[in-house]
Length: 248
Image 1: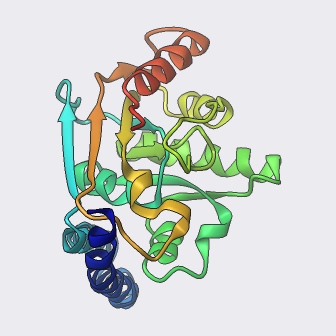
Image 2: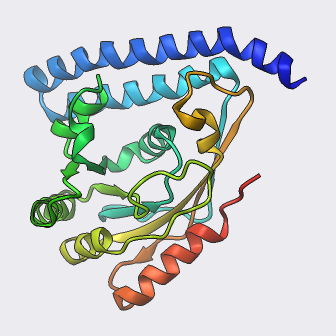
């Protein structure tokens, strides 16, 4: 059965990767047009459609995405979404599910160039690019980003592991980025997020996509950022996220 699945996976992976790549190239162009001619709102809608089509591309290999929200999200307040990190394919479901909250990403500076569709949005869509080798740049960038999120009631997305887990097992959480965000987004609600099985979509950055993977995303109960001291808050958030990670 495993051999048969691999045989079937090859042509479907070709289709998925072609559709995925074409989506990125087309929407790289559309983003530039929409942002430069029509402004933020149109650019944001263009990114939403790109996100949807990236998710749609996974249907070619039978990928399903299930969301489980434990409680409703607060309205008209900034959010800081804190999640474990398993794959590039973490981002599109988060972006789509939270699209009404204008999701913006904390990302490494290397992703700001060279990736059609993605790099342009990270540089010009309100996200922040940090240089992990330059502490001063990172602090300055995160400070400005936090003030931007606070002012506009947007959603900041941060992966405190710093890099993705290749086997689904969470890495140690780093507190510095979240600590800065909370300082400059004092009215935020923290939304812990647990992602399962996304790592299986791109094991070893392989071209091949395994068939029939179900990515599950659990949205935990939001926590007011000012409801407890940071050290306690960090422990609660990390525990909630990691307690529902399953590695099979």
